[in-house]
Image (cartoon, helix red, strand yellow):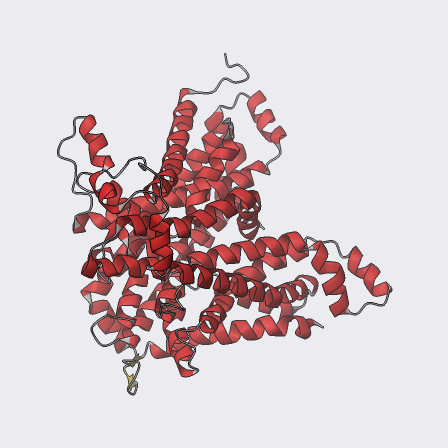
Length: 286
Length: 280
């Protein structure tokens, strides 16, 4: 009965998921345009990859999203969780914070193109405040920080909602006891919320690692750029894979694309293992 | 010193920040919906504004000329079919994995869980190459199959946790009555687990509704693309023909509003599902 129940799912998973991962790993050692014969390159593929300035830029952007974006997101989420617990209308607020995570990232990219345009509402509002020379929001060199900002905005809402749901499971008497002992809101957060919700926060950090590396559609259309691919300054590794494997005008470089994909998989693996070690329970229970 | 409702100034500032963010999110949705009812030149003149006389001409154009009608149908089909199939496959497996505590079952559970850490860009080239071999590129069936595969790790993971929380008493009663494992699962366990199955379906539907990378790579004909591809192609076509902003915003809303409706209707379940997947 065990195999009768598990084998259909297992078969689908092996064919459509596990085998492709293995195939990507294998392809990453070849030079291949997708049509002709594969040429063995071995680890040289990875060497060429790391010498490619576009890939290095994409890797740096990915790391910035994961670490810089992640730190800001989690600090903000924890701060919001701290204040949301006692707020009136919190369930409504939670829904409104959560909703952007159900919206395709392209929508934010398109919206930003309008809201931050030179004569757009953001600059008009700044003009009312007396700021007449606002930054060139959508200039190529500013696009990546804008993407990072948008991402932090939507991710903060998402993780706040998730952490808040865990905080709701904490028995209220713990807070009452802490309050009786004279703990203020921040102390209650530190001695009750943080330890009780720690497992969920740690899992969220791992989840962030994976989801931050696969961000794609937000960058694809950011600022309403209408060309086929966004400017290289904004690429992360997912965009790099897409551009290498499915270019508009040049020959596909599937070896490079899969090597970049495997690199991002290894990156996720290393970060996840390190995070799991760092976020073990002991440090908080002082 | 501090009354029942007494909170520090810092917390009050925090509340203000929360409400500003909430207001901004709501304003963004409202703005997208209102803008979709205005005509293109008007949007260019004023980014923010009320529709003079709200018309649905943008939607008519989006559905007729932008290909959004077919794309909506394709999105519903790909999302619905793949979510249903994923659950039909994953539910029995998750149930068996939750009930059998053997070394083999933990190894299989682990194998599925590892998939949670694999980003889509690893699979995109192999799946494209593989589907091209069997002539399933640019086909609804091909895209649906890919979505089923992508859904496996999370759906199995979510449902395993869910089944583990269901008491075994019911199944024991059923097996005393002489029901075999398949009948027990279909007519006793599955009905009890309906809540979890619905949640898994919803989360998978939402994921495929918004999925862009694979849809972009695996579909391109007008009659095969899903909504994210239709929108991306509409924006990309602007470099030749000039962008019709009204129609574009109608397209944005065609992607956005169904999610809004689903969330208003089942929001609690969606949030709970995502938390369950993470918490336990």
